Length: 213
Image (cartoon, rainbow, N blue to C red; front, side, top):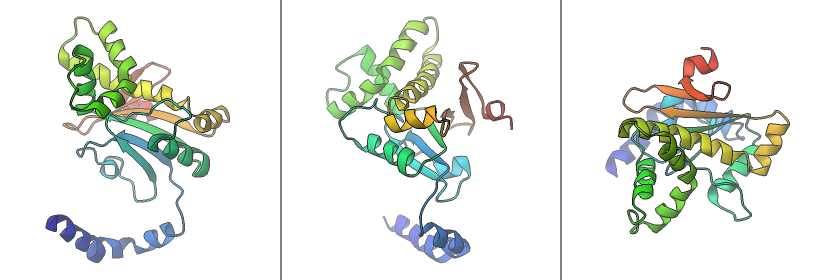
């Protein structure tokens, strides 16, 4: 903890003064450009990856960048999505998966051996929200290597969570009104590359190709 405390002091004494005007503005409220849903994995650094300042991303993180389908049961993800959509009225929602994802490895292991997560019952239940993605890989991944199957799972899980997003009433309404766009990304930790889902081509392409950069 002393290292983190020194980091706080450096922020207060060296970083904050250079961005004082920004933080004064942010103290009056927020108007983020995107709800960014990604994994809790410590290797995924959202601000560094997107080169954004505080106030630009409303971030939700959990194991496996999962979006549970909407139900009447209140949960942290459901409440955060509702707030970002209806109150903050974010114009974009990003679901971002990543390579070497322990949650997706767990989902694959669970498919192969239902007892693999017996000691982690809450994790096992949570990964059930990725079951359809695992089933797709199981059905369409015949002949592929384990590495190729995992990449397929990362992508299919992002697509599945985008589908789950559409079940949330506030998101569905704003989609119908043309007020929000959904985006699916996969971040490669080793290379820094980000691929984005192109719904017209129904596949992941480079972020340059997806957004015409």
